[in-house]
Length: 195
Image (cartoon, rainbow, N blue to C red; front, side, top):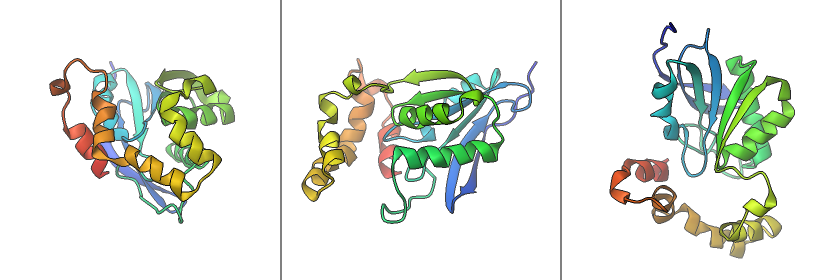
């Protein structure tokens, strides 16, 4: 029988950034799963999964800089690239003393997690992938405005991306394709939008 460790919410400092994380389960005797969140959310997306699996696993979910309750440095102060976010998460892994773990990657968590797996293949026991592209063909029409900005990071292309940062776009992330919007708590998009 695993002894339960009360779920916790804590912060640590990495490269001058405060990194918030949620943790649950028994870190001494259970396999660890690192939960890497997507856009536009944070570790908040795992708030129900952590207690649901804490009797069998040690679970840990950090918020990247610019997301959730972690530091929110300006783009002038912090390089918001997948390479840099992966570097921060890699330092998080080291500070948390994670030697062997599985990764659950979702959306933005996939390019971050894939970079970690390539850098530390000996640490990765399994990859659980939800909505995470690993190939160019997965970047369809939805990604065209982002690809334009990547190719030419000018004001016109930047302005075209602003629609992704609205409350309507955040709500769409939760409600697109569901049978009943009433089954989804508005807390999800309201919290994501505010954080």
